[in-house]
Length: 234
Figure 1: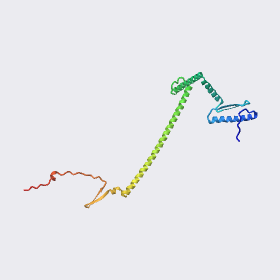
Figure 2: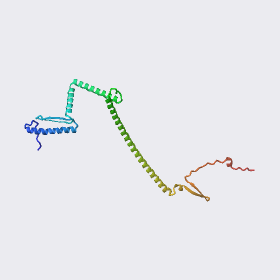
Figure 3: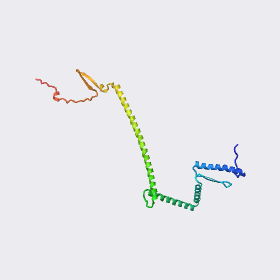
Figure 4: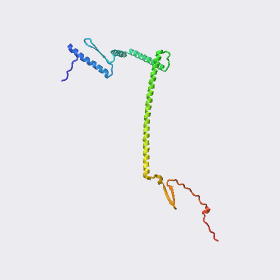
């Protein structure tokens, strides 16, 4: 059988009341700790027993939790009143203007302007800040250049590997061409096949089949030489 429903009311027996308080207190503290860790929440818990004993838990510090609570509570009640809300936003605007002015002055000081009002200590702090900033810029620059060099080296290795593969393919094609020439022309090669021998009137004449042939046109004969002889009869 399941557990019966517990009636939420004051426990009359002091012993049972103390035991229940200890169990529920430990469970409540455990849940508060788990909530702060799992949800990254700022938790503050305060418990006073019936005997006047004090128990607390804070994820950061109890003072910061209470100060934050009081500030937010004051802002909440301030926003409920129109006049107070106007004053609240006026204070916020003044605070933002002050922060903006400070940032503008600090930016001009980083550029080397308006340094007359700074002391030796302020100038030294500014110099240290600039050196740290310059160091960070140089480190970032070196990192980018190193990455680019590594990328270029990788591309160079890939191109070199492609060139090697192309040379292998070219050599393979040359070997295949040489084998085809041997099959077609025989072991003597094409130079011996292209030349044939011709015997005419007992003279051995050799000529190359692939040698260029020059043709010349002969001049036409004179008309007088070509005219037929006419015989005169007496």
